[in-house]
Each structure stands twice: as C-alpha cells, then as structure tokens.
Amino acid sequence: MAENNQVGGPAIGEGNAVYEVSSVSYSYEETGALDDVTFEVKAGESLALLGANGSGKSTLLKMMNALIFPSSGSVRAFGEELSEESLQDEGFSLAFRRRVGFVFQNSDAQLFSPSVWEEIAFGPLHLELEPGEVEERVEATVHILGLEHLRDRPPFHLSSGEKKKVALASVLAISPEVLLLDEPTAGLDPKTAGFLARLTVQLAAAGKTVITATQDLALAKEVAGRAIVLGEDHRTAGDGPAARILGNRELLLSANLIHDHPHSHAGMEHYHPHSHLEEHHHGDEH
Amino acid sequence: MAEAGLSIPEWMRKKPIDAGVSRNGRRRRTSVVERTISGLSEALRSSIFSERIAARPGLLQRIDPRIKILGFLTLLIAIGLIHSPFILLGLYAGTVLLAAMSRISPGYFVKRVWLFIPLFTGVIVLPSLFNIIRPGDPLVTLWDFGRDVHLGPWLLGDSLAVTRQGATGAVIFVLRVAASVSLAVLLTLSTRWPDLLKALRVFHVPRVFVLIISMTYRYIFLLLGLATDMFTARRSRLAGVSTPREDRRFVTGSMGALLGKSQALGEEVYAAMVSRGYSGEPRTLNRFSLAGRDLVFAACVAILAVAVIGGDRIIG
Ligand SMILES: Nc1ncnc2c1ncn2[C@@H]1O[C@H](COP(=O)(O)OP(=O)(O)O)[C@@H](O)[C@H]1O
Ligand SMILES: [Mg+2]
Image (cartoon, rainbow over all chains, first blue to last red):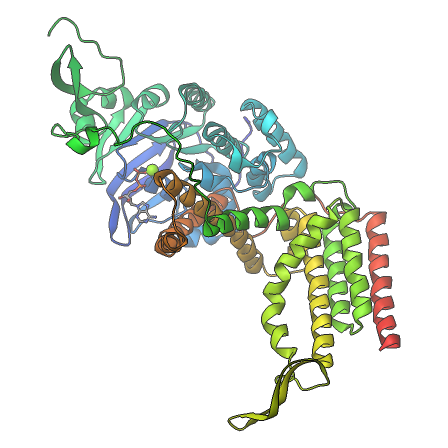
C-alpha cells in the first residue's frame, strides 16, 4: 500500500498543508453543528478531533470529505477549495476521492455490497483502477485485516467489530494519503479496539495523514500527535500537542470529555475529575 | 453528563410486582402485521434478489447478462403479441423449465411468481369478466334480474353473468402476466445485482435512472430492516399479547419515524458510496465477454420468438 495515486494537485511532501479549514460554520436546517472553526493539517500529521456527542466531529469530517459544504468559511484540500462546483469536475473529484478515505461512524451506512469481497473492491473499482490491481489490493487488504474467512459473507450480518474491520478495509484498499476515521473504536470490544488503534498507529507511521474523531481519550493518546478539541458550543476549544491537550483537565472538563462522578469508598461518597485515561488510585488520603 | 444530583426515583428501585419467571400457559402470538413485515422483507430478499441463487452454477447464471436482458426483452415482446392461451401456457411452462435448469426449485419459483400476479392482474381482470362491463355470451349466470336493469342512462342488461369472451380474455391476460413476471423474476434471480445494473448501462439506460434503481434497491432493504428492528424492539418491551388494533396503531404511529430514519440512513449510504468514488456509473470486476453458449442462447431465443409468433398466427 506504499504506492500512492499521484493524480492532480501539487506533490505532497512532509510539512505541506493538506487541509486548510478557515472560519467554517455549518448548520443543519435550524441546528448549528460547527461555529467558526479554523485549523490546518500538515501532511503526515496524526490528529485527534476530540469532542462530546453532538459537538460537530462527524459534521467536520464529512466536510473534509467533501460530502457536505460549509455554510460559511472555506475548506481547502491539497490547495484546492472544496465546493460543489470543484467536486463536479471529474478529474478533481477522482483525484480527491483517491487521496482521501473516510471510515464512517455508522458501519451499516458504509456497507452496502452483496459480499465482503465486493465491498472492499467497490472503492478501487469505482476509482478506476485496473482490474488486476483491484484484485491484488483487495486480497492484500483482506489479509492485513484477517478477513479471509468472511470474504463471501454479506456484510449486513457480521458482528459490529467485523463490520468495522470491513469498513476500514474498504477504505484502505483505496490506499488514500489521508484517512478520516469517525469514532473508529466506539462500541467495540477491547481486543478489536486495540487492534484498530495499533493499525492506525502503523498507518500514521507509514506516512498517512490520519484524522481521528473520537471521545476515547485513551485512543487519542495512543494514535495522535496533535489534538483539537471541539466544545459543546461547536467552536474550537483547544488545539495543540496531544500530550498537552490531554493533560489539561480544565479544558477536557469544559468540553465534557471527562466528568466529575461520585465514587463510593467504604461508604464515603466523593467527587473528583475522572478521565478513564489512566487508572486512578485512591491512596490513604481518605 | 453525570449530574451530581442524579438520583433514581423510588419506583425504579422497586422490584417488578412479580419478579419470578413463571409460565401462565398463554401464548404470545406474533401478529399479522409483524409477520407481514418480516415476511415481506425475507420474501423480497430471497425471491427477487437472492445472491445465493445468482451464484449457483445453473444455465441462466452462466449466460452473459447483456444477452440475457436482450433475450428476455425479445421474449417479453413476443408474449405481448401472442393471443393463443395454449402457446402462452407453453411459454409459461418454459419459464418453469428454465428455472429448473438454473437450479431454482420449480415449486419455490412458481409459488413466488403467483404471489405477485394478483397484484398486477386483480383490479384489471375482475370487472372485465362480467357482462355488465364487457358484453358477450354468458358462460355462468350469477343473478337473473328478470327484467332489464338501468343504472341512470346505462342499460345493464337482464342478468349478471360471466361471459365466455370475458373469461377467455382473463385467462390470456393472466397467462401473459404470469409468463412475463416469470421472466422478470428469472432475470433478477439468476443475475448478480451489480452485474444487472452494469448491463443496463451497456444499453445506454441513463446513469440517473440506474442510480435511482440502485438506490431504491438499497432503500427498500434499509426500510424493511429498520421496520423489522422496530418491531423486535417493541416486542421486547411488550409483556402481554398485543391486539391487531394496537399493532396497526403502532404501524401508523411509527411510519413517520421509520421513513425519517430510513431516509437519514439512505442519505448516509449514498454519501458513503460517493466517498469511495461512486458517480452513478456501476462498475464490477466481471468484464462481460461473449462465449459460445451466449450465442447459442441468443439463437434459441430468436428461433423461439419467431416460432411462437408464427404459430400464434397460424392457430389464431
Ligand atoms: N443530518 C442531520 N440533520 C440534522 N441535524 C444533525 C444532522 N447530523 C447532525 N446533526 C446535529 O448537528 C450537531 C453535530 O452533530 P455531529 O456532527 O454528528 O456531532 P458528533 O459527531 O460530534 O457527535 C448535533 O447537534 C446533531 O444533532
Ligand atoms: Mg459523530
């Protein structure tokens, strides 16, 4: 999967901006989903997009995948503005879809083919790869994710962990330079979640730009070098090195990513900020 | 969002009145509505778009989808031109034979096809059987009025009867529909869905049209899947037996939610397809290529079409 699709756009080198998101706002009919969000993503960066439910993470990722377009502000990818107009250009749209892959939060939405094998082949085929190469890529991807035994099964009836793997495989087979992952570990058992986290780290190490939307701080800590926090007001609440953001309890508390909750210890109830990030121990202070 | 003041109300702490698990002998039956929805979902899946059948090594499965579409189209036109009930019956029998040769159980196939036929024929055929709609020689008199009956300015006649012309017309019509539906079902059963869509594009069926068919297909499954889920979810919350009336009210009440839900999911599916490069042009790995058997099949279809149309002219 090392070889990339060099179609359209300037060559991407380490340090070039892959995305420039400038003062983007978005609302669905009446509901606001994003408010004046600005940031840049450099090639090869691994970025976590943190935010509570409803803070606008999915909306932002869909916008970065040119599935929806900002109500105001602009998103540029590879130097080109993403707009309905620019995506209508067949050349640009093909190049963009080859370079950016999106794993949806809802696997059921993402899996629509009659069999796992065809599901994985869908992207490469529709992005006009040679039939021989399509087969090679599907085989390789099936192998990487250990899906050999599921090849001919219809994706609807798989377990949620298997569905997520197939969804990821269907995007990896395209071999995009940028991966947008929407809550990749939500609802998965620890083993599968761990597997996906390690895979994400490897993809980032292989030079992919990885943008992971999540509320799973442990995942963010493991996979991301940088983190952006979306507040419940749909604005950027923080942006910086992951270690610094994840260490900022004040910030995480205000964005509702960690909570105060009561613990009972031998009949005594008390509250303290709690992140599930590290195991916390209660010494003999009580 | 653990609020500091969150507390569980008293009633939630209590045990259910009868916490024991006991049987009382009464059966909870699945309702008609519930069975209809999951039945419909299953029937659609298995009868029209069964991938399992399309993957079997049968006769029709091996024919190139383009040739199959052309051939079946030819036969459909022939069926439309034929008036002899015997030839139509022969053609219908032929479709059952084709089903058998394509590893589709004939019993299953016949049952499935006849499930759809009343849908297409009932309303049209029934009235035309009777002399008051279509005059003719009475075959069976149902009601002798004894005198001429008028309905406003119309003379209805002196009896209500099924006519010979009406009955013959109905038989021909039903046979025509049976043979045509059989062909359509054979086509969808024996062809993988992506291949069928791609073949349509070969015949320059507009991209938008293929896109609509393809999305309708996915949408029907989403809708039926969601409906089945909603019923399952409801059943888990229902202790007792629900009456048919309650079932109907549930269906009408949840219709809006269901449509909203399936529409949202449908949009998301479409977005996911676009995200992976879909632009309305279906693509598959199968490169269509004509083999000898495709030509033999095409020749057989052509000869059959000419023979039945010619035969029909001679008989009628
Ligand atoms: N299709 C939609 N129609 C209407 N409102 C939506 C839709 N999708 C999301 N929203 C609303 O937009 C806001 C942001 O949602 P989303 O981007 O899904 O957040 P997140 O992924 O962070 O949970 C929420 O208030 C949500 O209710
Ligand atoms: Mg989301």
